[in-house]
Length: 203
Image (cartoon, rainbow, N blue to C red; front, side, top):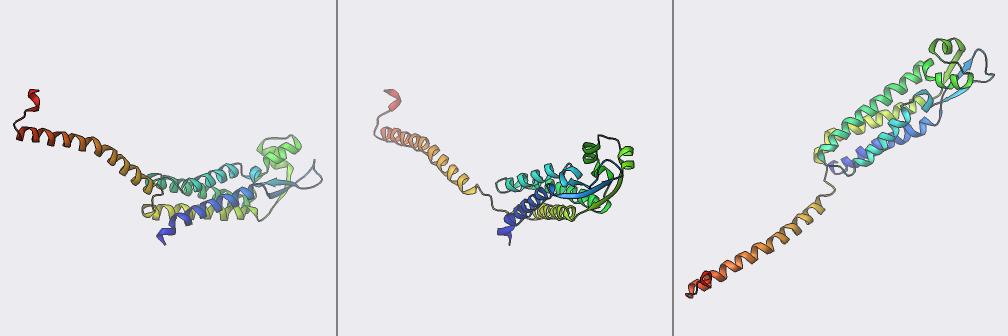
C-alpha cells in the first residue's frame, strides 16, 4: 500500500484539479432579470467563482510536482493541497446551495452595464442552479483527500532520484580515491628508499 501512496495522492489531486477545471467552463447558474434580458443569462463556474480556475490549475501543477519533490516539499505541498481543496469545497458549496447575487454580478454587469450590489440585487428576479457547483465540490474533496494522504504517508515515499544520487556519490568517491592512492604509493616508495639506506630528501 505504501509503495502506491505517492501514486494515489497524486491521482487524487490531479483528478480533482481536472474536474474543477472542466467545471469552470460549464454553466453553474442562470439568472433571470426583471428587465433588460428576455432570456436567463448563463453564468459559468469561472464567473460565479473567480478563484475556481486559478485554484484548479494550481492543484494540477501541485499534483504533478509531487511526483519529483523531496520529503520536506512533500509536506509543504500537502498543506497547500488542503488549502486549495478546502477553498474549492467551501466556495462551490456556497454557490451551489445559496445562489448568491455576487456570483452573477459580473455577468449582469456585462449584460446591462449596471454595477453595485444594490443595483444588481434590485435587477435580479431569480437565480437557478445546476449540478456543476457540486461537481467542483467533489473536486475539492478529492484534493483535500490527496493532501491528507500526502501528509500521512509522505515520510515513507521512495525518493525518485535516490538511485542517481547513489551513482553520483559512487563516482565522486572513486574520483576522490585516486589522488589518495597516489599519495599512499609515494609514501610507500619513500619508505622503501629509506629501508635501503637512500634518503630521498637528501637528493
